[in-house]
Amino acid sequence: AQTVTQSQPEMSVQEAETVTLSCTYDTSENNYYLFWYKQPPSRQMILVIRQEAYKQQNATENRFSVNFQKAAKSFSLKISDSQLGDTAMYFCAFMKYGGNEKLTFGTGTRLTIIP
Amino acid sequence: GAVVSQHPSWVICKSGTSVKIECRSLDFQATTMFWYRQFPKQSLMLMATSNEGSKATYEQGVEKDKFLINHASLTLSTLTVTSAHPEDSSFYICSAEDSYTDTQYFGPGTRLTVL
Image 1: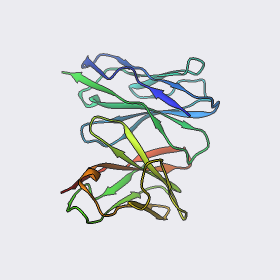
Image 2: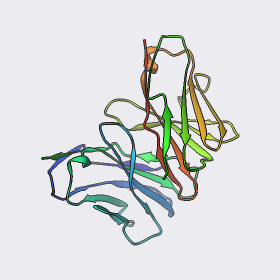
Image 3: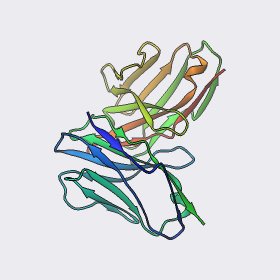
Image 4: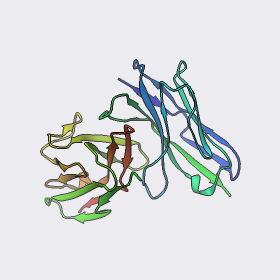
């Protein structure tokens, strides 16, 4: 079974600063996906970024980037130039490769951007 | 792209009645959809995996006769909470998997309150 650990329950950062959210996971799988989702106060789950384990290059989506360390089973999310709209709960998630597989979520990190 | 709708967004019902929640993928076909339940300040808890044209797969501890799932088409899955009780009050979220990217996209959620 897979497990996902987010060790930072809460974080806060000043607007325009950079913040890194940590995520570690445990699996015996070699091929898999990793995701970061955000859940703002509206409670809509929004995909932030997606990483395929077989790709060595770290995924990037505008101000969001990841540091994927497969050997260390680490998948951190970096948010650059943080904005007030980034205030949300962030969930790290794991999914086995192949489709029709369930997501395994971490417990989440509540991020607050301070004006 | 990758929009998932959920209806209704909130519902209040009396104890003993049944409530149906619809989940639709608007711009892609989803062979697989998922139903989650989320308690306040917690992560998502997977209830069941819904596959088009076949029976849903329920997670351990989820009553299949109480939470009826139907996935009649590639764009629609429904969750019916039968004989609802106050302890069924929760936030229910669906997701639909885009099979081209093996990525789940989430609906906006339904808040169910059972009086």
